[in-house]
Image (tube, rainbow, N blue to C red):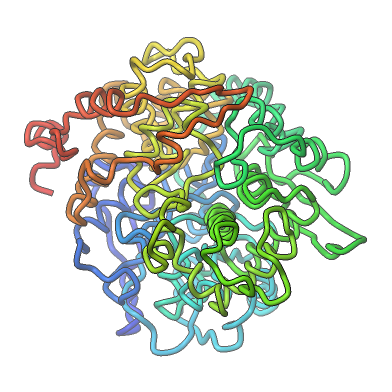
Amino acid sequence: MLGGYFGKIINIDLTEEKVEIEELDEKLLKKYLGGSGLATKILYDETDGDTEPLGPENPLIYMTGPFTGTKVPVSGRHQIVAKSPLTDIFGEGDAGGRWGQGLKKAGYDGVVVRGRASKPIYIWIKEKEIKILDGKEIWGLDTYETDRRIKEKHGEACITSCIGPAGENQVLLASIMHDGSDARAVGRCGLGAVMGSKNLKAIVVEGTVATPVVDREALTISLKQEVPKIVEKTKGLKLLGTSGGTVMSEELGDLPIRNFKQGNWDKVEGISGQRMAETILKKNYYCGSCPIGCGREVEITEGAYRGVKGAGPEYETIGMIGSNCLVEDLEAIAYAGEMCNRLGMDTISVGAVIAFAMELYEHELLPKDSLGDIALTWGNEKAVIALIEKIAHKEGIGELLALGTKKAAERIGGIASEFAIHVKGLEAPAHDPRAFNSLAVGYATGNRGACHLQGASYFFEKTATMPELGYTEPQDRFATEGKGILNYHSQNIMGLMDSLKLCKFGIYGGINLTMMLEWIHHVIGWEMTVEELLETGERIFNLKRMYNVKCGISRKDDILPMRLLSQPRRDTGTGSNLAPFGKMLNEYYEARGWDDLGIPTEATLQRLQLKNE
């Protein structure tokens, strides 16, 4: 028996209103694992550089991994992949919560949606029951209300993946939201716009089927040994959430401040996880199969922002909507974050594009009446809230900012691109490569653009280790030598985690390659070596790169914004540090087996069994 998989994905053609079940071959599963890997293979086979991201030919691919639906810790996740309308290259997002487990309980490993419905619809999946249903009554609703209406109709046991008004309006910053007010997001790359372009409001799942596991007893023994260690090592995340590191991030020079231009900021304690715990925090949120519980549930009962109740702001939201825009009111940030969750937009890109707009305004490159009576000045929380609403509905200046920083800067022209902090069109998240040298290469070579999690190399410059690769202690964050190689390894590892479906925070809990292999053996039944596992991660990463090569990506695109590359922060955490980028990139290309243009060589493709893909 093959464990971990049902060996079935649902293919839905919305144009033809057809549903087919596809059987998956074990050789394909072993080559790409599932999740990100298998979804990438489908996207690579069906689309290319000429595919219109918002056209019916762009598939929206939901995929779980073999660990999803099992008791493997931090495995309650799924991946969504499509060609990105924000960047026009490879796009993907990873979400926690319980939707992925719900799909597995229905007896399927994935869903691939093609075509375009003639009217608003949603998809209902419950074991052998798959329906395309009229979505007229829920079209136009926010994501919380959509979840509530669907539960009223189909019962509390169902789990929703849906878009809000931003996705319906095909805003290029639109996210896909899950689990109602718990608000687990596939935020990056504008995949909510792809969903909206298909007139698809939601995919709803429910079921009672157990994911097969080859050796449950051995898995249980392993988890009894490892889970307490994971809980102990991540107790800080449980206590204060991801925002618990905000103050330390500012001290290290990692926190983005004033569109990544400013060094230290004396208001940081007021927007920290510690302040959240003292004021608006109500309880922890746990994703499926997660012993960590880093999610925050908050409530604001009085004041200007009363009524906020649900998922609290993560570090990224605090960094991008807070310090990056110089907003110093935690409750205002929580309100803005909930607006993004309800409207269905990525808080990282939204914070980035608002900071971009504020700097344009500062340099008199936007009309003074851009927001009517509201000045688009640094720290103006009213301006932030007004812009979020306008972006979601493409109203006024919001229509321009809904394009993202890269495309908006191109439309404005002149020096506007100086203030657009992105890589390949994807806005940089709330971590600064001037604080962690390895991030410079990680951002530049990330397959979806600037991303801290596709490689997460800075984990290993903070506290994480990976003994199988010789990283037995944290690396020097300002060192240069070996950082290209570190990215090579860390990107391969994160690709494995996105395909098996493991949360990246498990690395902080001590999850390593040996544990992954042990759980693969107990869950699936495969015997693999560390080398074979790493080669699988390398194969997945290179297939994404080859997809981007089809879209015209090469070395010319593996670059950082000039602000991050050439302007030091001059703060107490980084001083005048600038990553020696060219040297690290060359080391990275050599480790990858790519040529001087950043294209995988024939020998590399042959070794990774990608030659004929």
